[in-house]
Length: 457
Image (cartoon, rainbow, N blue to C red; front, side, top):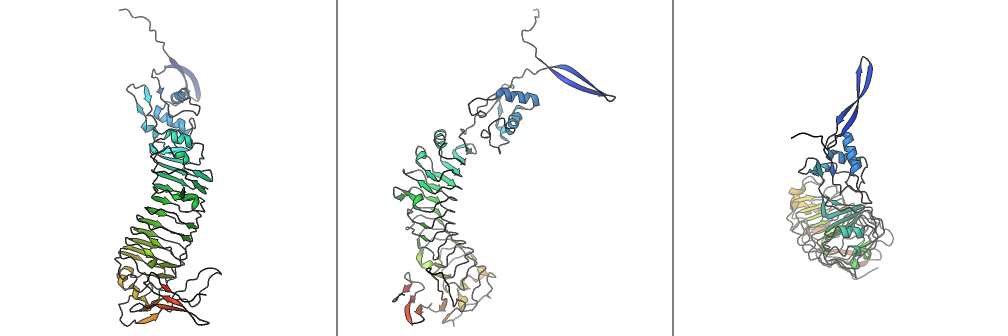
């Protein structure tokens, strides 16, 4: 069988060479065969906004630099060849996801599971979890269309002052929605969302609770976890009784009307502006935080918290008076940096505490006044400036000399007048107007209606 000339054209490339001898540089040119390997690129996730791709430009770059195609693709992206939205900047190891096909000359790219929506990305290639940054209403229709199975959506720095749920009505699986770090001051809930169980609206500009909570006059009853922290709310009401977790921290709240929470397990009122702690009936509440608030009086007789395990009042600089008893279910209790002179005499009498923090408070060290500490002496140890005391039988009746004699308040504002009394049994306290002498009422330490008043002024 005679051999004939091949019909396949031989391809060659010319390479310039340099060679230096005795300080003289010789420049030459030589022919080198070009590799027959053909680079086939599937670039679905590297598309221009007009839908075209860049295979020729990319292939040329790869050949010029003589790099492995996987690495070359990533370097082209870092150099700005592709839109930033195609591969997140942090995903520089993404080329490891590229696989070669059975043919060694073909490079296949695994299809990107996350559709492209301007300003948005799915988290960990999970099309049910999406985060968007600095967007407005325009991309929402595309987001809903591209991610029909979306269950968790986080919008950071929403560009509008208003936000409507209506765009998300087709998303039947949406269970968590967060709109955070924005200037949003109102949310429109014209339709109910049975699937929406968690709503996060922290770090916005809400000042009226009605701008958030109401769907046809009622808070969305299927939403059980709500975070409204770091807004500008001064009052709160309208919650339904089936809340599980509620965060109202770091709002200038001065009043709140809470329903009987039948399921609530966690409540955060840290950083609020209450003067007197709000009434609370939550039989399943486990954790309650009121750190760094301006509360001056905490009245445990107004709380029904039989399952409470952790209560935190850290850095309560304004706290002057506590009444009632700690729930016996409590395991951890913290109250620090206060103006308290003492806690109620039988405050810890029924507790089963494992941890206590009462540091940074100047307690009255009078052995009779300090009797409140006896049940927890092994837990507080060196947390106070007072020496440990034993239970005394001769503390029949008396008051603390640490209570302030002069109390000042702004005109029109309430003032807390404290009187820390001890005795066995714990005595009632009568209050009288000094001049003219007028009986004002009696304080009953453990009664739910603690003040019996016959006169007002």
